[in-house]
Length: 146
Image (cartoon, rainbow, N blue to C red; front, side, top):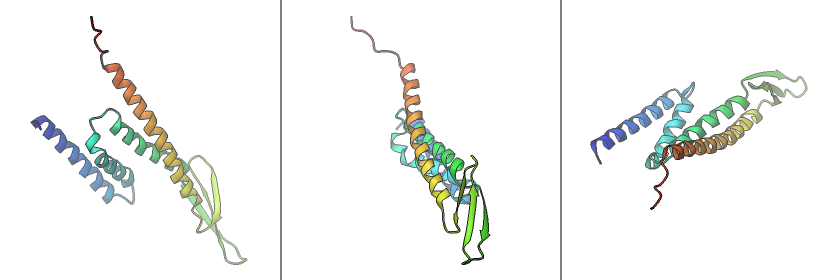
């Protein structure tokens, strides 16, 4: 390995460790995207030089977070029922859709997770396609044999 390659590998793994460390420390506030990004970079480290692999991974993380944030509940209110003492919860998300159910029902969180997965797959496929398209435009065409 050349010294330039060694420095690049050290920088890459330093970034991975910093992202995972910050994500773990700040997991209760803003840490989840950083933790997921660091873990994704660690997983694709062996293929990081291939066109579109890292870009697709970053796209998947961004897509998951966007999908989850848009669909998961952001504000909830709880009310009691005098008959049977069952708690009823009503929640809304950023898009304005409402969820309601019992206090133990996590429908909004499950829907947010599923929406995050769908958007993550779409973002990963889209960013990988875009990265490969950009890379193919930069590559000169093969020479024509005479």
